[in-house]
Image (cartoon, rainbow, N blue to C red):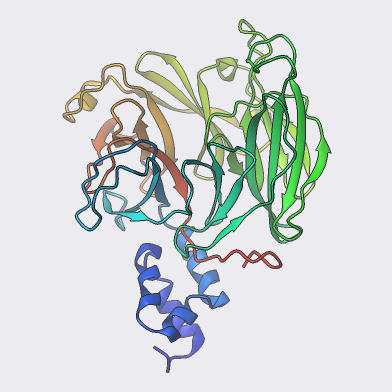
Amino acid sequence: MESLPREIAGDILSRLPVTSLVNVKFVCRSWRKLLQDSLLVFMLFLRTTKKDPCLILHSVHPIKHYVADFPSDDSNPNQLYVADFSSDGDRIVVVKKIRVPTLPEFYVTASCNGLLCLCDSLHSSKLFIYNPFTMDVLALPDSAQYPNQQVVVGFGFSSMENYYKVVKIVYYSHRGSIRPYGGNLPQSSVEILSLRSLTWRSLGEIPYQIFGKRPSQVLVNGRLNWATWPIYRCSSARLIVSFDPSEEKFYEVPRPDCGSLDKFNHNLVVLGGCLSASVYRKEGYFEIWVMKEYNVKESWINLYNIDIMDQSFENSGLHLKRSHARVICLLKNGEILLEMTVTKALLSFDPKSKTFKHLAFHGLPRWYETLVHLGSLHWIDTHVVAT
């Protein structure tokens, strides 16, 4: 490999799954150095964007998992696993446990261009940027603290400035805990940090109360998108808000006139690169609305309708009563990946045949949250952070 031209070596290695490629660094020092070649990082990133994404499974409770290579470790309630699809997207072929920074408890706030943003569950002011494949980690400096604070964290990339940014939205109250539907917006403070300066800057306040269920952001067209809480419980005024990391400004994203997205029980997701929303109509039935052209109101379309209590779904052998489905992503074969939030199973739905398939695979944790991730070898450099 050392005798091959740089371009040829990079082309060969970039065809390997990133889960396999990381093992190359253990062969010898020269191969380890090759993995840090910016050309290989770039070529791998381009190829990865054309494949099904890998999945990060965050096990959030002590579990007894089934991976023979890793003994059970119930002392650590937080574990990360990575799952890869087969080349045809028909099945998940490998699940591996991956190392995480030494944190007692954490949650994953976002994924962007191969990097994860982690937040310490015990101290929400402590944030970390982490590449689960290179094991590169960066602890961010603490920001201002507020009484009874609730924090929403966004993580994106500024294409104009060519580096990553973290935005922190803090809601706080001097009169006790913050509750949704309070009739008034809580006090807020917005701060932003770039991985180039590693210094928090204030952006003032925000006139929205963002729905901060983790992970909550949806990254489309370079913008971070969130749904908001309605001001009143009986109100239908639930908005979609975006943040542009380059302009460092918030915007409202138009919703369709039909009113489906006014419902509280809808979740934002990315399907085929488009901003989408799954809307629950009744038990076991939901619609998926897709914004075919970002930020164009007229481009919203009800593209999918899914009945999870369908007979073909029940025949999969799973017990699915009282189980809700969360839309994860659109696979390259046109099927939609779903996570059952109660039974904790992964399934694919074929919109053409209206059939479901249970994606059972070896190594699945018993309890987890699924995050779509673009595996890469991007390293965390506070001066030039993007390829």
